[in-house]
Length: 356
Image (tube, rainbow, N blue to C red; front, top):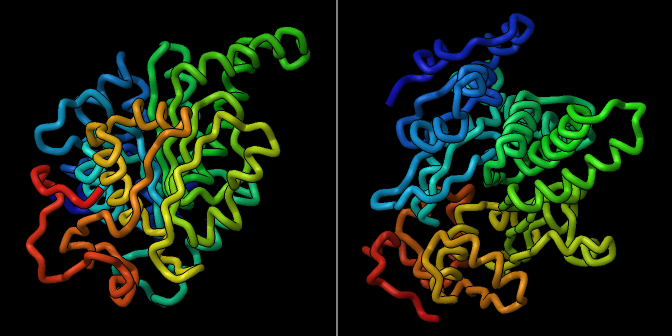
């Protein structure tokens, strides 16, 4: 893999970010596209200047698991506290578990290899996330994602976006900004009738072209238009306390938002329930339980829309041995049914079928 210093040389930063990037090197990659497989970083401005943005992303930036048909990829905004190399590692697992292409849009971290005060850096990430949630600060991720969304609508190109935890906050704000940019592009601020007409076009176009797939949603304000799937595990404190819930969506007549909530796997309010690596395993088994090809998100959404999706339980999943490499607390593995650390089960083996 290319080391971080070599990757950073490919990024052209604005001068006013230089002090931040010197203090916290991972900030160099904030809002930049990255192939999780090779971990090669692509300067966003160079990508957006290309003749065919989405073809470039599909062919050079998205990582596809072995033998994948390369029919679908999602642009993924990772969660909190993941430097670019760690978010790439977890995105590779995401792609391989759900048999889909993934291109990272990096959400940088304040963490660094040799911090002066190692207890402070993780708190800086939490403070940053809180500021973003309150809408008090921007992020290159927000503007760059909004730019991609508007380009997709203008070029009539389907776009799949995915995010996790803190990434859901940034994605929601990006969608709001994209809607504003889309309308502003076609209607003057004072022309209310024309703006109303283009708002209806936003709803129609984004509903047809933009698909959102979120893990551990931590935000309540999602603009109408795109199709949403919110995935979580019961007991995850963030979506239950900070995100939009099924009850709130029903009250607000948000039928565009579908929820896929798996049965509890950990003690209530355990933050391990927020770890999307467990959610993707439950999703993989859900595809198979419903007779769907793993990664067929279109059919998954259809079954959710028809209220006919059979959701897998933790007991039905054959957990891969290397789950220990993706947990925040090794003790949490003790509560997982069917997990044996010394087993030889490989979840890439489609001949191994869990109990349905």
